[in-house]
Image (tube, rainbow, N blue to C red):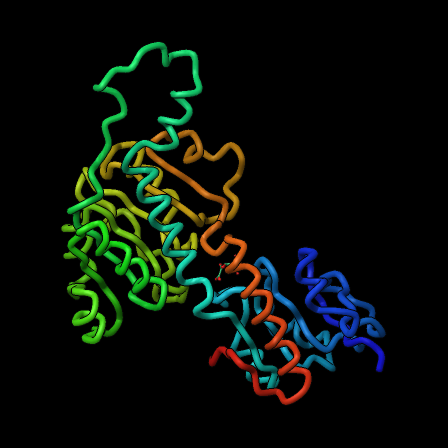
Length: 314
Ligand code: 8YV
């Protein structure tokens, strides 16, 4: 049998190794020749390339779109469904690593880990002064989780270890989580007003786009920190810039930005009350391996039975 031809860009060596010789990977293109386009039976979305109706229409033999990752805001899932092309993703396996990273950013910004690191390496650090780089205590503080899905729950579990009071805001109340994790539902406004840390874990949808803007940042305490582990456009970038500059809030930890990456001369990048990571939520060895395995399982299911192990509904 000739290898199945799939389109995917930037796949790391492990991905190619696990795909094996039965799959030929060709570079991502939105303008294939019609002969090339007919060969493509699957799209592997690695690192969020846009998939929409016009792109799908270029590939008449497409059987599956398999996404490396859980968030599918870059894929028009309804357009796929309309063409009977299943979309797979990798839920669950990245919850723990993303929750770990949430706490990495939260602790880093609250306890001056990054600015302290720069200082400790620099020429100014000539003697120890107990008055320097005093941060905000995480233990015993109040955490507000926006989006108590799988990842939000794992964040709550970790927060319990820090003796935090945990508020959450979700479209629906989760009484099981309230019982199991001791989390308390409240309105977004109340969560913003009470949280010492406000941590975003919702998917990017029309409802969550721009969710955190000037009025929401104004509602937060001047001592509070915003953590965005969701998607950049959930936070209005210009509003966050003003809030951090003018100290409406104490600081922010961002794993994602809008745009991503920010232009290299963006003023946010000059602020020392911001800790920023290049979208590392799921970037641990174990998680990345599992994401690849799940993407490949979905790929083969799409090419054979059409019934994916993990599929996204429109
Ligand atoms: C991935 C992510 O880095 O799962 C997600 O939604 O954003 C990340 O885990 C990304 O999907 C890479 O393909």
